[in-house]
Length: 481
Image (tube, rainbow, N blue to C red; front, side, top):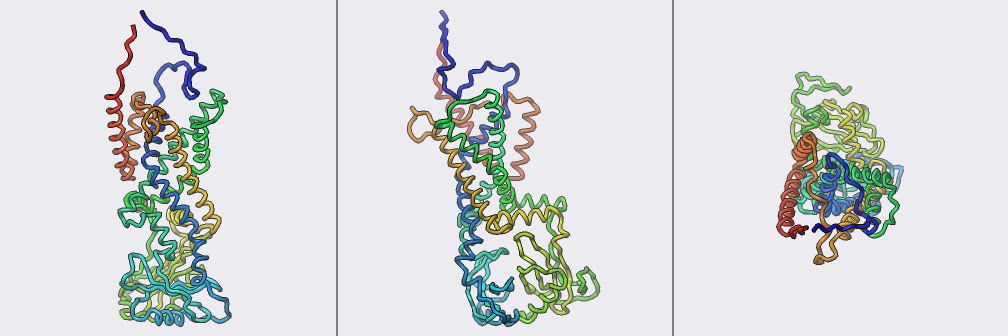
């Protein structure tokens, strides 16, 4: 005898599809993205959450620096103005024999201090000891350690290292690269799933009340739709700073001719050309070999200002070694960006090379603008507030995703177990060309972003183990007669 069970569709849960099965091949791309989005969000979510939280803090640091280090960065406005040489000599007296003069950043405008930077024992890579001098009175306003080309002060440096490496050095940078690499993939998959969900809800005229899981899902998708473009931007620009993906990006730029041209500071065989040309006559200058003369800073600045350096924020760097030139460069990263630079022979005061931001390749300009936006300095406080809200949105997406996973947990299972993953077997219904596209994309992304490739293999192994375990523990199907 065969038993037939009649089920009323109205008695089924709201999220069960009771529509008649479609004829032909089953959909596969949407279920594949759903499974990818689930596993990536579940396993990489903590890294993205930490990166978003620390990134929200970092977004506000340019403004916080102006408050925390107001005494060091600012000075009373006076009519008097000391020469750079006089300011440098004051800073050298403050440092004594402990430091070697490496760069000077003149006060960009009245009310700011001049930053005289030194190298000395005990500093880390890319760190300098900065003496802040009042350009009007010569008062030493501060003595701090700065970091990198941005000249970040201790507060921003600490938060930056938290965001970039969790203060664990190069091994810690793997966390931020993992977060940046997967963020773009997760939000792209989520965007496609959101679009598919909108289409399905319109076809079915879904008017069910949003409570519990569905309400959280609605919040998750709404926040995701609002931050998707910003998240993709942060992912792309973050990858350019990463260890492995960033190196691949740099190699790609160099291969296609998109790399930023480097200013040539070599003096061997370089001819003088105050107009900024690239003459190569018989001049062979060894450059300075002793201590840097502070008066030379005023001279090379005057020459650079006649050539192409006209932004208020500049840095003057003496020769790092014999046979190299002085460099004067603009470092104004706010809008409009200024990045011109010039190399000057300290012995002859002739211009040996120049670089103009306006003539850089478009990709080089986009890279510079992208970095400035990511750091929150392109449009000042507005840029920083947008980044802060964006980072909070990304973090809340992760929290809402975990909330959905927890709400979907089986109520009869032991506590601590979350919801089950989406159904398996999406690729079984894929056509041959679909399998080929998935394979090519997976290999390409894995090669360009190695951490994505390694973790994808880890996801695959984990998913296989879970599937085998579920198959062994699944009860046998009931026998019908």
